Amino acid sequence: MEVKTIFQTSVLSKQWKDLWKSVTYLSLNSSHFRTVADFNKFVSHFLSNRDDSISLLKLFVHLHRCSELKLLNRMMKYAVLHKVERLAIEISCLSLAANNKFPPSIFSSPSISFLWLFVAIYGPIMKLPPSLQLPALTTLSLHKVCFTAGDNDCAEPFSSCKLLKTLFLNECSLHDDAKRLWISNSSLAKLTLHHSFTETYKLVLSTPNLSFLSVTGNIRSCYGEVSSTCNLSFLEEGNIGARYSIMSNWLQLFANVKKLTLFGIGMENILSVRYFHNAPEIFAFLC
Image 1 (tube, one colour):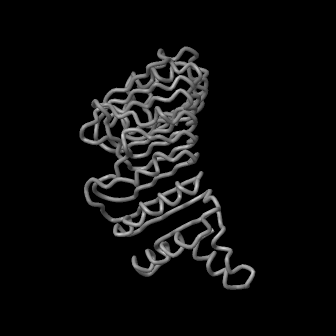
Image 2 (cartoon, helix red, strand yellow):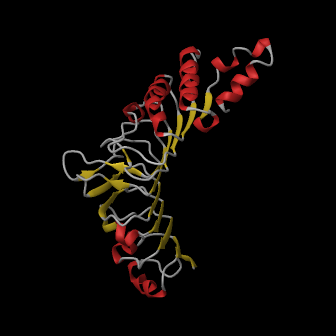
Image 3 (cartoon, rainbow, N blue to C red):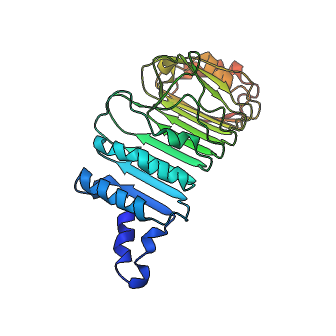
């Protein structure tokens, strides 16, 4: 429930006057407030007076002005401290200063099982830490974020998420010091990749239990080279949609797939069917 609605409901009856202090699901949208000062004052009052003994299970935050990001760190610390399980953050600023980062507390939460980060901005992209320490995470959706490398030129952010099942990456990129994105996770079952940038970097998959793989967008110019450390023998379903011709190493990733949907691909690419062990039965649609 939208947090302002909760407050408005609380004034309808004396028995509901403290209702807002015990809610476990909050939705905060800064566009519902006339000024940044009004939004900051409201959120500060809410966090200071909410019942601390009650967990905050779900939180959705939508920020529309860059100056509101200063309050995001406090909100995230509060959410993590109160065992948030499902967290969604949308940032719709027109622009951001360089080197902006999400609050680090988000990425070391022991309770978050669902995380959705959506950045709809122009200019510098919000950076993530080299490793996500989220032991309970099962679903992760990232839009327009930037991965950073650890000790070498390789970004490997997901290997510590031992329960991760579903991963969606949309318009994500690498920081200057990173040249490769390594998606390494033995529990990952569903992976969706979409990219329309012209930046090129190498992609390595180490996902032995993957059952679904979808790749769309400008994948030829984005992923200059793609490889897998395993043969993806459990791959049940795949989607390929591209603006440019598919490279043969992408087709090789789908060698063991049981059902494959192709769209936006010229017939000349179908000649690469020799990469598939069970062709042509795997092809569901040719659009």
